[in-house]
Length: 501
Image (cartoon, rainbow, N blue to C red; front, side, top):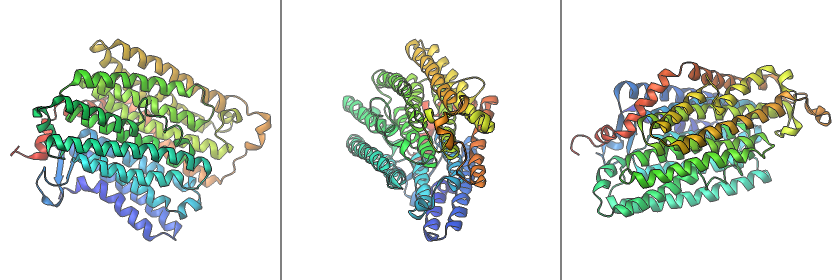
């Protein structure tokens, strides 16, 4: 058995079981939570190293030969995302020790956290389209409970919107799988990639492709299917918001990249033109939604939508440079967006509110926090030399190279509006004086130890954003190699199916 492939799924699964066994022992749960996240990060890093050195890895569960059994497969894109899952998982696991109250712990927060991480890694590693659906359902169940833990009215309202739209997406996804199985007679994605070009009714293949676009579009919050996200993500504690913003929508985007590079590539002029328009509208509508927001989490939630558009832009352009840009953008945005939600939680701990009009004075009171905010905020806006600059530059160069000036102009305009929204948070929360009527909020209401614990993952993620920006070449090279694998799936197919196919 290829343990390097199975460990990123088995580790959070085992951790969740151990956490359930330690249900009434909070201190032991805290230890197991962080230890499990550390081991997951180690397993993810090992997988990325093996794939980068030895090429695409696959394994067949139970020794059933592909395409008849359950397949796990890791190329560079999926192994990069598994490693990022380990990073975000560890950051949230540590931050949760200072953020999650005992009542949520008693209702199973820590086991649910690791069940969610298991679902995310499973989705990134599966080579079977039906098992991708199964992992989505694992994530949906865990995320819905995490979102509503606490039982406040706004949480339940946001949770209902979240689960209703995602159940609709799941139903559409399952119907699409059924139609695709009817066309190909298989569920293994590598086997599908071999069969789909010879399907007589290519028009029906395109119809199924659009169904997958709608199903995954809901899960990744693309235009016009995004409205559930800003209505739900802002209701959860910062730990949960960071986990959701960093990983959940990215699983949907990963699925879009996977099926539109491996399966649906026979009518690119049609499908990828639609993806281009969706990318432009997603990044534009998302950033315009931030203009009127006065609450940090809601503003950041709209930014999640906007940033998805940049990743789709690379997929729509469908060139090696563009897909390398999408891969690098995924690395950048997962780290930056997760960190911004964690920083928002720190602001709440120190001031007791997320409302920008009630905030102020943080620059003088907490200069380290101000500096830590600027790193992911300016990176999100694409300011050099931070990671967001290289990600956007790569995508813009890819667009200019093939004459797609419209999407390039849109991306540049959205970057300016992103900078505006980030400066709005800076001016209101950090730079201006605190309003006199809210002076009672100037004193921290939490223990110093909790603040220090919460700062640790924020510092780590900010440092990684700086490192990626200052030494971008290794990750740009890795992203380019991932793009080559996506555009030339023969190695993927050969690794999964073997020489007999």
